[in-house]
Length: 192
Ligand SMILES: *[C@@H]1O[C@H](CO)[C@@H](O)[C@H](O)[C@H]1NC(C)=O
Ligand SMILES: *[C@@H]1O[C@H](CO)[C@@H](O)[C@H](O)[C@H]1NC(C)=O
Ligand SMILES: *[C@@H]1O[C@H](CO)[C@@H](O)[C@H](O)[C@H]1NC(C)=O
Ligand SMILES: *[C@@H]1O[C@H](CO)[C@@H](O)[C@H](O)[C@H]1NC(C)=O
Ligand SMILES: *[C@@H]1O[C@H](CO)[C@@H](O)[C@H](O)[C@H]1NC(C)=O
Image 1: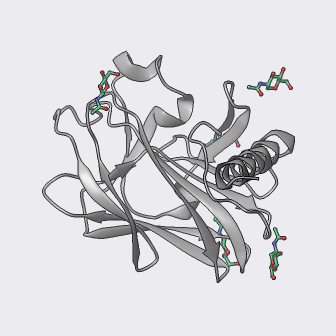
Image 2: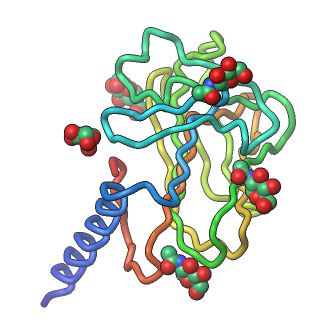
């Protein structure tokens, strides 16, 4: 087969693995609706059947907030609440994971003018001490998502929001999906 065929085959296999991981069961999934209150609530988001819970057990800093009601209907429920970090340069989530396994880690962001300031934030994400990504919110109602496939070495993973300027970092949802160790995951698709 030509290179492109192999590439497409790999891509399709990767998507199939991810899709079946998602569809069959949620074992090992960590699906946090950041800023969800009361902190003991859980719910199933009906468009993807994922059970979300509050992030309260995973972080002890930040403020809970909600997007402006006007934007809610356009977005999945895990984007309605958020956690923001006006204090401190670096605020971290601590997540218990299986050591030496591969995870898809996904952060989602919807500003929704939660603070009434109409000021679009930008900030960085780190995994432990290492920079993962920069987040720049492009519009009040512009959803953005960033994903990485990461092999975790230890039983604890830190995902941190790091202030890089005058605006306040925030996060709407944080999700971790365990991946099979041997998966040839080269690419992934945002809507999984
Ligand atoms: C959540 O906590 C509140 C107050 O602590 C309690 O009244 C309620 O029953 C709890 N709900 C669930 C689903 O555990
Ligand atoms: C969610 O689960 C219900 C009941 O099992 C099913 O009917 C529905 O098609 C599922 N929706 C999605 C998006 O998977
Ligand atoms: C993570 O593991 C530690 C140590 O086993 C435990 O104390 C803590 O409650 C766990 N955190 C969560 C959110 O499960
Ligand atoms: C922001 O969202 C609006 C409305 O959905 C869209 O028209 C616009 O292109 C988006 N801007 C960016 C930079 O993505
Ligand atoms: C991946 O391999 C590690 C050690 O080699 C093992 O501890 C872990 O359970 C494996 N994970 C999966 C999902 O098979």
